[in-house]
Image (cartoon, rainbow, N blue to C red; front, side, top):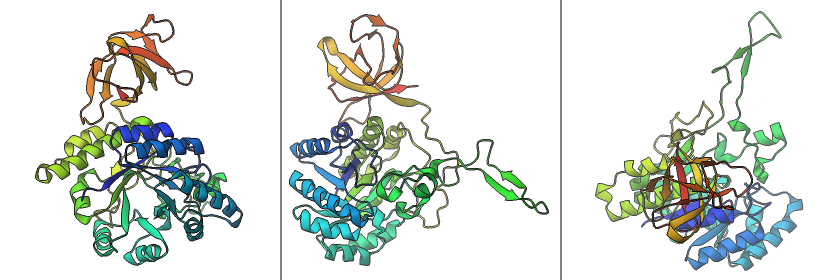
Length: 409
């Protein structure tokens, strides 16, 4: 069975991109009751996302996965009822109290148990299933043998979801108090300041010199002792098919449209290729495209090895030295002159890659001429300045609005 490919949708625009490049479903968040409250998915945007998804026979799951206090339950009741009326396909929950509320106020909507609930065993899966959950999103700390034990022995009606790509947390399944302690922003209420990504300097007291501290530094910039690498299980797709996971999840509701398009496109083609011809599956061609996304170092976390130590990103950087987000095509005129909303500087002579949906390899081109959107005059370059800065140039390919453009640096 080919698993569902589940993509992040921090905004309606990102949901459109995810579906365009091959996602079977997206997950979004309520504005105040999920673990990404800084996304821009308001109620009307969420409603449009559901309508769009269902027009393609695809699905939308909505996170309501905070750990709630009693004074938040009236808002939770109202939100649950609204999501049920909206027709979302699942509500993602961590808190047992919220499960009770959703069962009562959203009786037509499936319950998905969040990875934040730290589900690490078949026994825990069965507990949630008996209490109304249809899908369990496993803790990221499990290895492939533990996951297989669950999928091979679960009840027939239970679905299993797991993360395969994106940021991971130094804390256990994301249950962390560091942000609240250091920045007054509660991670378990969707407002994480990500202090695990900050640079730290360590100091020790020198023997015989009480009160005098000596710095212990990785380099002159300090060290990123808490920052984790990003998960990537691309080369484990054969194993993921074998163990029978129902849904493969990509992290990244706060990432750009470019990131979503690149990662979803690579996994979409990899899953389809393995299903079509498993004997000749070669992850290298899909990794080549996947590596064009801005990312930290990559790790399998504990999927292969519970003793794996290669999970920390001591440089603390997200880089891609060869590619960056060029822009999004917003319209196509006569003679294939495209209007592009830019995200980085574009200049005549730049080499670009246009990501074509349903094709793994992008269309490669060089900008021959640039035109000012307002005056139509030729220009040499355009810089991001105000929101929705746009430019026109010819793209001699079969293009449509919504296609993503990379700039080759």
